Length: 155
Ligand code: IDP
Ligand code: MG
Image 1 (cartoon, rainbow, N blue to C red):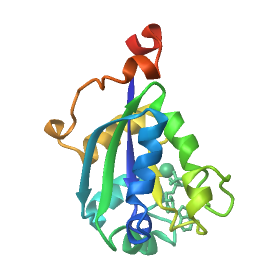
Image 2: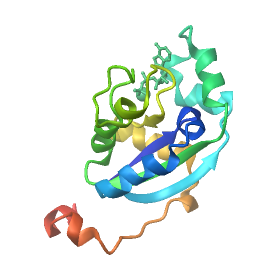
Image 3: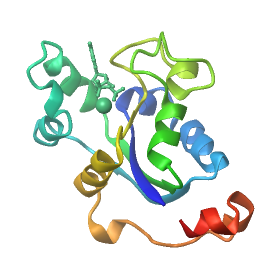
Image 4: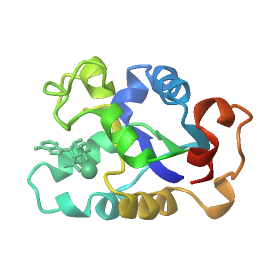
């Protein structure tokens, strides 16, 4: 099973979408193994968005991501990273498909409601960036046999 990081960004928090977004991931069958509010600062954002620090919109991105606390979610499941990226939709919310979070709730490229890890390697780094080890809970929900077959659940 993979564990991936989702941030409900200030755009999602301000819009009152925390419950809606969490509901989608729960209904899908992902296990919430970590969850908290966190106020971000430019230091963690320079690390988290290291691939964007030299882009002209980076100061605006930092302002946007520090406007309110974000909701940090660690979600576990088979192929959780790609499943959650598909549920998130492409970066520009105006191009994101209906049925995705960005496609259903967003109109912006920057104010695009959620962050989701893009590869298993980055997911491991990002979960460790936003959660202390004691904040991730290794439990198996009793619904797992209804979500996966035994071979899948063992992987
Ligand atoms: P992703 O969130 O879909 O993985 P990234 O390219 O990793 O997209 O960019 C991280 C975040 O930076 C985006 O979610 C968006 O909020 C912001 N961003 C990316 N490209 C632009 C841009 O061209 N203008 C403004 N903001 C951008
Ligand atoms: Mg990204």
